[in-house]
Image 1 (cartoon, rainbow, N blue to C red):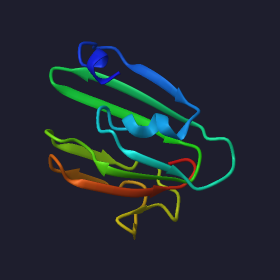
Image 2: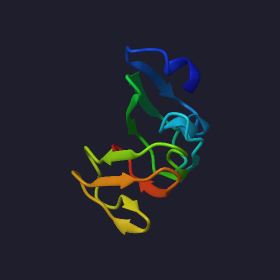
Image 3: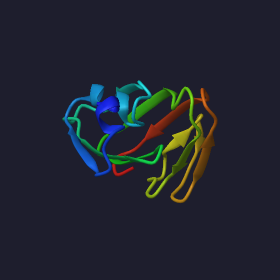
Image 4: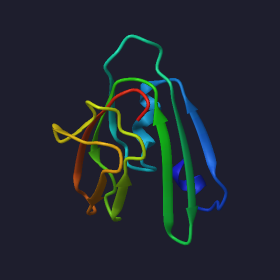
Length: 116
């Protein structure tokens, strides 16, 4: 999907029903995703790429761990638009409005609660 999107300028959406779909929660990253509850998994993701900038947005509806390098060759900026209490990055609490800056190849580990 990453190669197809790189040529598109419109938003592409993905309604995820399998935890494996989150490998591309950051487009092209190949993240490891693990679900921490028994409810059916649900998430929704949206992607857009234009002029060398890729934008990803999403909402997770389950307790989810995402880990791995966000991008091997690009800077990644992350903004927690809604981070329920108990969400964590590198085992430290984060809250709504938290901003993260990740260099190319930086390792990311986050635990998201439903509604993140």
